[in-house]
Image (cartoon, one colour):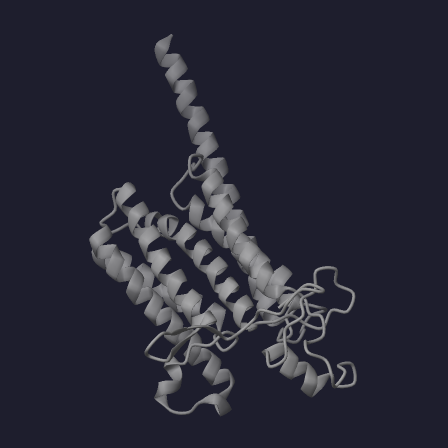
Length: 294
């Protein structure tokens, strides 16, 4: 992978374990790293917030498991020719997961588990927010190294990427854009840097959490803020640049983008309403306190 003139370094295999000849995929490694680091961060923050980390740790693992399998199952329903038996549910590959379905499954399990262990759902979601942001950034970096989730052909893009021979982008361009790709080409045509957008989106969401962690006005503010950033970046910045973007149904917008627009609007209204309610309550309390002192 390179911007221009640099060496190509993308590879689906990150390294091979010496003596065992086990190949570790770049995408699989960074997804595993994302899940483990997210768990560690969530447990540490839960302990700091006075939540029962011992019970919530298991809830995290359960939600992740259901989310991944659910995301894979919905993708297979949309692409039935890829189904090769029930083991297909465990073949977790970049670009072959339904992100929206995965989030929905994970959120449903999280809410059920919070009710079971007696923990306020929004308090736990606040704790999970930075863990999710970190996981998104790491997953995007894994996709970048493996060449998965690449962008659409972008001959004029200033920060376009080129992937080496044998990468998913190169193979797709050789098959679909052969008239533009010389036979002697050792790299793909330039494509939008969608994986970098995903990484930056995760970092931006994490930065927002860091900035507002000492400024939280109500329980749930972290979760709403991080969700707003992640949904907006994924749906309205990354999605239009992806090679596998969904077809438009209303103007330039796909069904997923229309759904994301509704989600962003609802979250923005909830955030604004809660902040105004907190500000009003604070003003009333301050007024009563002033009267009491007089």
